[in-house]
Image (cartoon, rainbow, N blue to C red; front, side, top):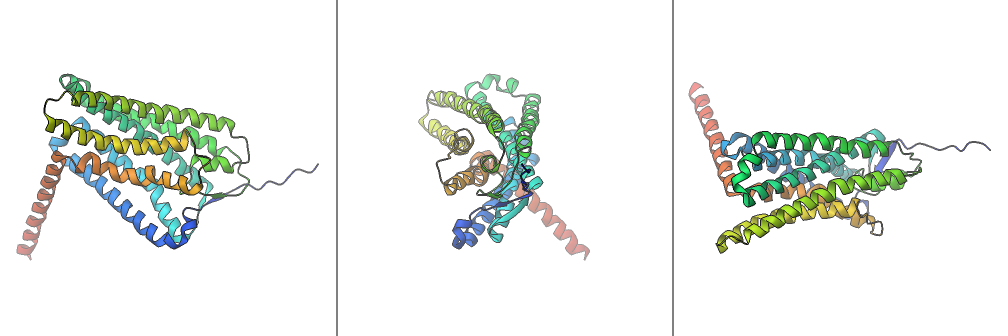
Length: 323
């Protein structure tokens, strides 16, 4: 018997929203606006937290790293999505696809860990304020942040390596917005059982455990809020924690439904909409929920803007008088 010729896939075609050709321009404008607002909002957070000494607390330290992460996370997905909307089917090389997959898993896992740490930080601040300074010292915060980046670095490496070792014989069309785990495994012409098991275990370890720890933290927070004698204090704290929990639930809910309990029975269009929530929507909501609604942060923004405007005014006067 003659050996069968099997062609190896060297590039993939991301179909994106090809089924919505008449909406391509509108979708491009919407995603471009969201991307601009996401990057701008998170850059503002990084600049303000870095320059205002009053915001050098554990909560804002975590928030600064979350903002930096969100910029990289959404930049891994959205620019290629925008190019796809303009070209009606963007081609991506195999190495570039694996690189996108790696950074998506790496940044996604790191965000899960950071969100869990931020929930734990709020739990200590509200439920154990007397021990907060000791338990959340600057050294401890630095260690937690460093561990979130380093451990999740390896978390992204294993799935990407195992996917890259699979055989892809064609077709090469990925009916998603980016190089994602489920569609890549569906396109493989080799056995994916071990790869599926490893990805499932990692998804449980990262998504479910971090989500569980976050929920437990908020349960204790809510129980402490109910003991606040002031009704206005309860409402204020509930509003803040409720908005945090809403964004966390949207992020974890969409991720868990995609990777822990994959919706194989759903249409590709529904899966694309689900992926939009954790790749495009939550990176925009995080700066709004965690900072722009915060009174201290808004005061810091006004202070930084006033300082910048003052410096610019002095420089303009110097230039005017010198000339």
